[in-house]
Each structure stands twice: as C-alpha cells, then as structure tokens.
Length: 110
Image (cartoon, rainbow, N blue to C red; front, side, top):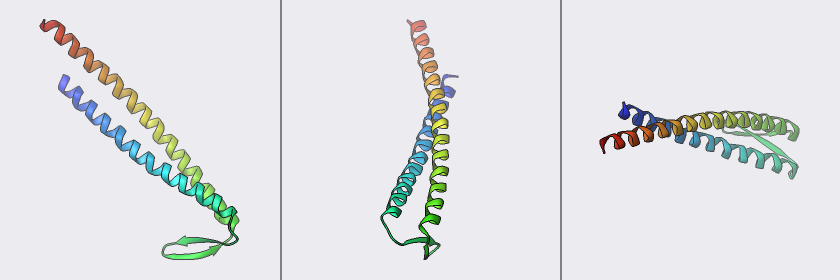
C-alpha cells in the first residue's frame, strides 16, 4: 500500500512539474505579446506575419488581434495555475499521509 502511494506521489510531482513548464511557456508568450502591443504604439507602420509572408496591416487590427491573444493566454495561465494548485495540494496531502504511515510503522517496530 505504501509503495503505491509513493508511486502516486511521484506521478503527481511529475505532473506538477509538467504543468509548471507548460504554464511558463504561456507566460513567456504573454510577455512577448505585451511587448509587441507596446511596440505598436511607437511605430508608424505595422506588419502581420502569416505563414512565411509579412503583410502590412493596420495598427488597430493588430492591436485587436494581439489583445485577443493576450486574453486567451491569461485564461490558459489561470487554468494552469488552478490545476497546478490542486495537484500541489493533493501531493502535499499524500506526502503527509505517507510520512504519517512511515512514522507509525517506525513506532510500532520499536
């Protein structure tokens, strides 16, 4: 029973690490979009990349597009944070349970 819980704890911790890495990718993208949005204010002409082609576009259209992408990323990041928090709580609870069982076992062996 204890080995199953230790294995489950290991899996939970790996899942937390994976979620954290994925969330970090979205945070990086968010920073890039924020930077792009700020850069649009300082430029006269704007371009949009579609596939391998750069097409001139209106600043307003690009701002709307980037703002929409930022909103989507923020929702995804919040979702990852909630999932990460739940997994961390479950992991901590399981870790306490395992430690408690190990302490009980050690007390009974003495």
